[in-house]
Length: 69
Ligand SMILES: [Zn+2]
Image 1 (cartoon, rainbow, N blue to C red):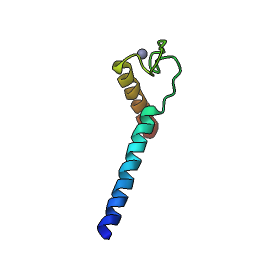
Image 2: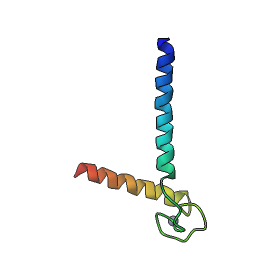
Image 3: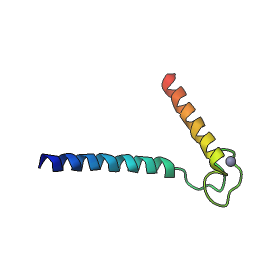
Image 4: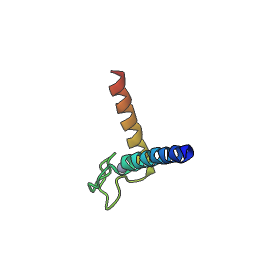
């Protein structure tokens, strides 16, 4: 019985983590432009993985700066 409860809690935790990951990934809405360099796009949020990586990096650096201040 105790094991079942532990498993349920662990599963719930895992599902929450997955939901969070998906939310951060899907958070950007389609604007017709690359979110990093604003190059016009027909679909997607970035020109390529390079723009996506740079955007993520910049976002992380901004977040760190906010916490450091
Ligand atoms: Zn771009």
